[in-house]
Image (tube, rainbow, N blue to C red):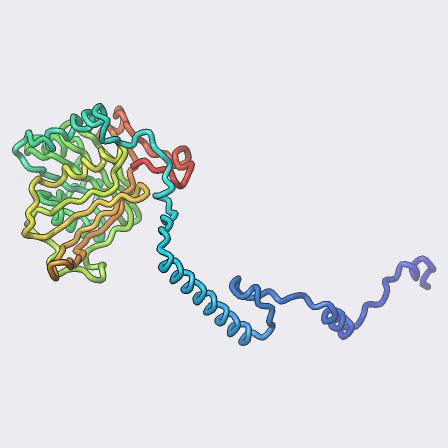
Length: 333
């Protein structure tokens, strides 16, 4: 059939050739997007030349910074404090004031007051165990190392014994603290500390666990019979002081300085870092530190009054991430 006039009018116009299209693109060239953000300001197509120009620009910037530093030293201007999350911390109502006698009396008369006032003759005696079942090899090694580092600690292979039955036997044998470590995906995940007989019981999230063998520059004598020195850093609020007192109550009084062993609980942004070191005197002025291990990190999840009671326990503090983490500069310890 022949074509009608309407079909001829609706025909599309002929497309231009590929050469013509390339020439049109080259007439209005778009600026090339550079590979990195650092070379975005340098409009050079040659990659080698662009890299050389970037290196020169970087050197000039470093030289200007050095000149500015020298001028500041010569002028003797006071340095500005570095802006960190700790320096920008929001003021907290529970921050402890040393002049407030009421809060200090409440802290001194808490559940651990008998230990700090030395009203008991017995030293802290700790029972360390895992969750029900059989722990993995890594968790088992971690528990054994922790039992050797903490003085007067016995590692109990729990298997299928319930906690209430274990705590009854602990009361008969004059134990003061119970530490339970649970695991998830073959690694330690949570840590419980319960102070006997009145409590409190604290739950921590346990992360970044490393054995002494996994540390690069570790000491040879990882374990010792001497009582270590205890350092508690940056526990300033009422909750923080309570956590620090519970951690300090795990260790006996009067450390033996002959062993030169130090255990540190360093609080930074509500993360508690555990480190175990041995210090050596090089000279009269210089002191060297050598990490012995193990190391791990704690994050407070809850504080419960009394001993383990998951059904009817009264909680003093429960960390709720969505409700409490409203700002990066708000901390609770």
